[in-house]
Image 1 (tube, one colour):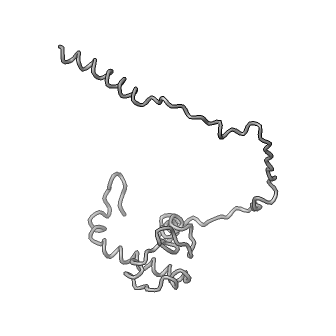
Image 2 (cartoon, one colour):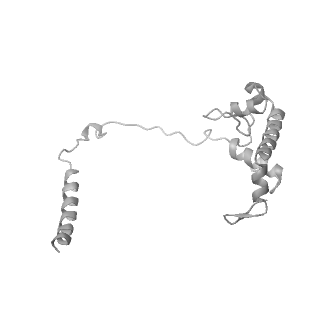
Image 3 (cartoon, helix red, strand yellow):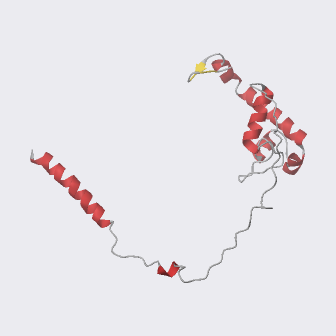
Length: 154
């Protein structure tokens, strides 16, 4: 009985002592940063010329669905917004954000040529997905037609 009562006494006491240690005795004087008494003039520019005119035209993208081309374009949009010449902070490049080692693995040794040639990037993606499909062929056979976490694997 004494032990249980001691718990109820020690926990609040420890909380009070711990919070008392975080109290600050020093106050900070912020008067150095005061702008009172200064003549300040702010010149705020008007909005004209700051922003480019937005066109009223809507760009309609074709619906590609769950096709190979749809997968390819969705991946490209996620990776680089479809830009062939982009290089991210980690050094991955192109529309599909390939790394140098991946490019060497599929037989492309000149990364500058890779960035400048969209046809080379498209063919590199095709070769890379074909390689991945070949590497994963046993897994594809094992899970094809089955549900994994409620999703049908096709």
